Image (cartoon, rainbow over all chains, first blue to last red; front, side):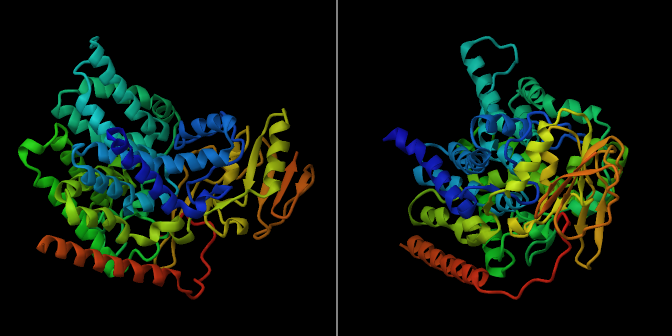
Length: 494
Length: 43
């Protein structure tokens, strides 16, 4: 019975995953903005610029050697919900069975998670989902990295395991995790062991990031700063745990005043519940997590209310670039609200309402956010061009056209997605990595790409892949042989 | 008793709000204007 009780939050997380993903669980790939999975991805693609998908793409490629890529993607997406729900519940005392479920539902069904999922940032969410486990493990970690006692080794092992999802997620997941656990580590005098652990697990992306020569365009501060996603302005949106920069990553109907009011009140109730926890009830990580939540909120506000400061920082050192999308750092505040709500609504009818409320104030997140997330199969010709290019031992890059970072294929329901060609081939893909962000007045903000090697040039190019039947342009075919001409793709070889 | 009644009232209110939101989103809407294809979203 006790074991079954411990499993309830994970089962609830699985149920929420089915409810939220809905059509995304059908056979095929979910393709939306940064959520790009491809069949048979290469193990080590030749990518340049800032290592945004390191080591997440490698892990996906390795898993795809064992399982179909479609299953890998579904497993990772569903795993986010299970990990988040079970982790948040683990931060609530086990005797409060319903309260544990309140924390589980809130942390696995909130606008932060929904908006980030609709932007396709599964790698960040993997780290966010494991945050509660990282918080717990940090508080229980040994004092020194060299501690040899069995208990200390076990404690360190727990910290490593809890940090693995963030390590797989890559830079953004790890930065959010570091922001969250750092104050706890300081308060608990675990700085060395936590620092060494997170530092080592960050090496896969940290080393290429420092050596890539990637550039960060300060214009990204204006493009990616938090924005108002409801009737309460930027501050109200952030306090409601939303406020993502991209209007198209919003949950349908989220701006309705009654839903926005419900979300704001629920989040404020959670923060209040956390603040009013009695001293003897406060776990060891209580103060550290509160500081992390305040710091994350501060970072989220920075781009919106003091963009000049952030631009100056990025101008001084490109390493501050990840702070452009500051709303991502709200994650510890989401966790604080989840634990606080569970503390406020412990049992009886209020706890039951607390159990249902997160879903009721964000009901349209259900069923793939009302159809925004759906699985589609790649047209056969994508596999054909992938086979042709990957079977060719001759060197040379592949140039992906049209010259733009994103695509909106009819077979994908017109959903905007990062060019899948970037992840499909075992050779360097030359592509436009400039990001264009639409403005409310109809204008477009241009955020320069991060890889200086991405230039529209045929030097060193062996293949040209042209996607889509629109925006065709004259192409001098002398010296180029069409090796595939299909309904949606043309592949030329030199 | 009062706590239970308050919880029931809040739960009912939330359920009505959620139903209205789902109906609003599910109801047919005019086709949105043609957006530029290759934007990384809109602010």
